[in-house]
Amino acid sequence: MWTFTFFKVSPKVPTLVTHLKSNNLFLRFWYYEYYLPEEQRLGGLARLIRFGISLLIYLNISAVLVSQDDQSYNSLCQQRNNCKFACTANHYPELSCAVTGKKIEYGGNLYGQTYEFSITEKNSIQLEEWTQCASYSKLDGENMSELSTRTSDRKARTHICFQGCTATGDVVMKSKGGQEITFSKEKYLGSIDDRNPCVAGENPTLLCVDPLDTCEKTAFVGELCGIGDSCVHFPTILVAISISIPVMFLVDVIVISSMAIKNEGVADCPQSTKKCGAQWLCIIIYGIICFMSTVVITQILAYGRPDFLWTTWVMVVVVDTIRSVLFQTFIWFVVLRKFGQIEVEKDETLYDESDYEPPEAFVKTLRRLTKSLVESKMFDTFIFSMVGVYALQVMLQLSLADLIDSVDWLAAIFDVIDLLFLSLFISEIVLRFIAHTWTYLLDIWNLFDASIVFISLVFAFLGGGVQGLVILRLLRLARLVLVLRKASNKETKKRQEGGVLSFSSPVERVLQTFKEIGEIKGILPKDKENVEYVMDIISSNKLYSISVESDKKQGNHQLDMEVQAWVRLASETLTDGNWQDKELENMLLSKNKKKKK
Image (cartoon, rainbow, N blue to C red; front, side, top):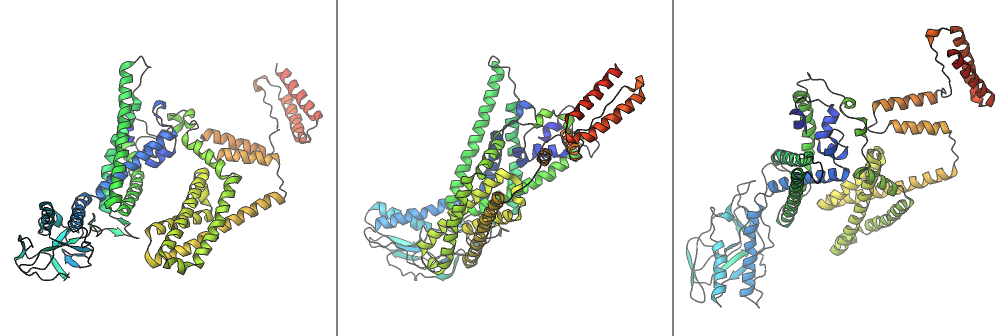
């Protein structure tokens, strides 16, 4: 957005706050776009869609970078399925293709899930399939399956089949049908090899890798990993940000250009055609981005590193948001203000007062509806009933911890139940945050509750072995204490509200209302001053004080002094509210007006 301001003929520099609101991803979504022309402003739902598309752009670029070699690795590992199917079909009904457990170290990788594939000559097709799998065992360091990884000198874990025996040189093997197969010395063998030495003239066999064995995945030198595969690679994050910036800028230019096209109506055919074409272009671009996101996520979930992708994506968004604040502050001061030489135009001079008052759009409507939901009695009843059920579930799980840990299917059931309760509590926190915004997290117990729930969710997904299990149990206890405390506080508050009398005057309620009006975000400074003036008048008991002004050019100073004295006396005694005081005040005011005439 700052580029449009910079290239204007006579640019006016807005305040830093407005500049950040117009250029930051999250602020552009959250705040109404009063700084744009009225025809270019987006409603809440449109801003939400734009915000989601921006996040998908980050996701697409991050996914491409963290899975650069996954497709090549996976295409090779898919050949393991072909050899396994050929072995099973060639030896049917014999079950001779089961995993043998023989281990072989090759290229720095230990392959432990292997099976034997012996040659059969029932027909030419079966012989061709065996020969194809045998060709994979002759791949050397210059072939595709021998590509080195990015993290070390070991070969990629994509090998398909090995020779069924160890050869120190060229050994001629002979099948039962008389076909000769030559086994040669293999490269990159390690110290572990469970195969027997080759004997010339024996029936040739292959030792193939089972499809269930791990396939190579894209990895980088210098990854910083936490729990599980949640790793961060900062060069990849920087590259993703540097690619995302021009892509999102180009998308923004297309969207803003389409909205800037003006047409006078249906009769203005050329302009209407341009605007319609530009809008269709935006829809197509958004559709392509959504489709690409679906494809890359599906691929990474199938044969990539999803935890690495999610961590990278979050870090890209966070780092780029911080970069945006710092960079836009620099742009505002150096480029737009010319190192502070150009004065800043106040928002009151650049924009109309009506620009600050957006219509009740998507975000505001959503917040209003969510607030009515979370403050309803039905919502509280549902949450507290779930708290009771969750308390029983946690106590049962802790009391039967040893039994549950020893039975896999029972542990899986309790994990699913715990995950469902976690999802429920996260939904509650999100709804309350939408309803009350940041004020919800200002309460230390709410903040602690949200932290416990989200940390529990991380441990539930990432695991962490025995230590992770212990931490999960501690987190369950902490959550149980928190939810029970929340329920207890709610009940205590209800009893206090129902059993204790509270006294307040209408003046206090009026002052409280004006205070809330003054704290509304986006209120103009002039209106805020007026609110403070009204509060000061009411709190100082000057609401019914009367001031009379006369034309000093006509004299009559003595009369003015007398009238002011009588008015002051009437104002001081007006607190009794009797009708005589009001009549006296009206008489004095009317007398003063007649004298002026």
